[in-house]
Length: 199
Image 1 (cartoon, rainbow, N blue to C red):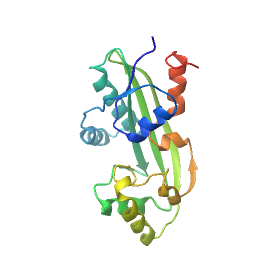
Image 2 (cartoon, rainbow, N blue to C red):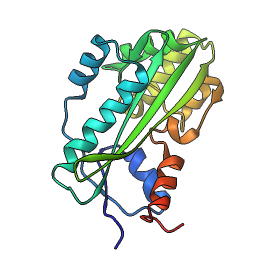
Image 3 (cartoon, helix red, strand yellow):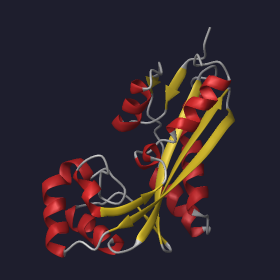
Image 4 (tube, rainbow, N blue to C red):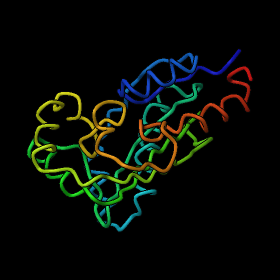
């Protein structure tokens, strides 16, 4: 009997990616204080990669305690720009400010996934994408946020690459799925290797 899979995330996009790939799973969002842990990790000087990995692991571990036999997938995404770690914008003004800071420059999206089973990590991966933002005008950025606020308010960096946000970029280096918040190809390969998915 294949392992039960639980996605410890309330992300509609991550669930859609797994569903579209033919993965059977249930959703149990992890109730954790992400902001407090992220702030503590930043204060300790943790790297963006370690922050993404630690947050993903925290979510997987939390849900795994209630579901020890299942494969629990915890995920997190971090945006690193120069020396800053960006969070989801609190309001439209902050979204515009984030986009203004990113324009004409390069930033990284780090998408981490950690799988727990029986209270222990059994797999982990952090995918990294480099995104080159074009030098858009203040007027365009303001209009973009106004038009798309309801969709981008929960997005780190204040954009959705799968929608109008793609117009903000002139070059992208890396896996599209990592931009969407899940290292999907690596995850599917692991599930196939262990026999959870038929290869």
